[in-house]
Image (cartoon, rainbow, N blue to C red; front, side, top):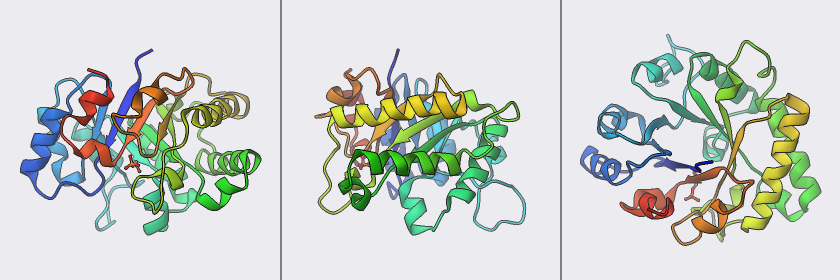
Length: 243
Ligand code: PGA
């Protein structure tokens, strides 16, 4: 099964020119490129092999100043949307309840949802049982009433992204591939057992670069990687994909 690479550009780069250059250097099969909103249309026109993703979506259109709706994204030919990223949870106070609304409406609009979950350093220090408890709770809230026929749950992907492993966190380092694979195996078990979701892809995110990507992607449990910082370097996605 082909592994997916999600390039999360976050609030980068500063100019459309740079965005265009980066998109051209990142256009590979089974890659998903998620630029900031202002570049979506231009990047979408460039991509021939990679799919277009957005970094967030609100749960409605209409009188919501500054927000972008799932339908607007869909009409811009966006295929994927990242929801629940820890930076939005932290800096924009996004709650699990809000994320749950967003997951439901994005799925209903026909977008593929890349839901990010992950524990912080304090929970990580408490060990595997605490990590699993935290993740199971997060999923329970984020996926509240998502199963069932109203939503296209087959369009859901999960990223296990431990917050302490994100490259911009102080003192961060990537998780070990073995540890990440164990948690991802647990998440898959949980998704099947509690949500009857059996074929959901679960990716790893957190300080993935061309140097360590191979060791994560070699694990059968890990269906791909979400890449932040490294995805801003032209040529890095190509190397990460092993091309
Ligand atoms: P990173 O970011 O690859 O720079 O650690 C990943 C993410 O937060 O999306």
